[in-house]
Length: 201
Image 1: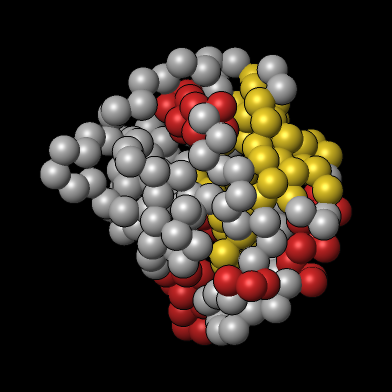
Image 2 (image 1 turned 45 degrees about the vertical axis):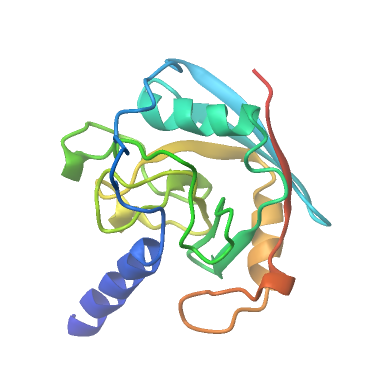
């Protein structure tokens, strides 16, 4: 039992370590106002792999979805990478620095129960969720796609949609990408490239 608890704690640290920057001077966690109240569809195009179709749930995570589609509309994600990949767990991207320490110029409120927000979306296979630092309201641009069920993250991270097509692409990326440590760190030259994230409707 001790070993299981330790492994779960380590995994939570992986998602938190070096993720989007906590609020600093002039940054407000409520800068992004909820605009997306329904279902939004996006396509993530990954170089040499193909496309991943994702359905975002603006009803249960309006702030998170609004932030994500705003960044996508602005072309923020175009040319960024998946910098951390752990097969059997998740693949994380959306960092303009590519090291897990970067983000956009704003942070958003964490839409999960530990932060006082009801969000029933579960971190099952294919879920898309926001990475963050230890600060609850520190999510910015970094996101992760769950490779295999990781429901112990529920209530602690803001899931905001699910892959509807292209989960095989996630499988291939997780299987193919070499990592250099137990944190899933990927060397810059090996990081899968996000060609674009397009909002379809």
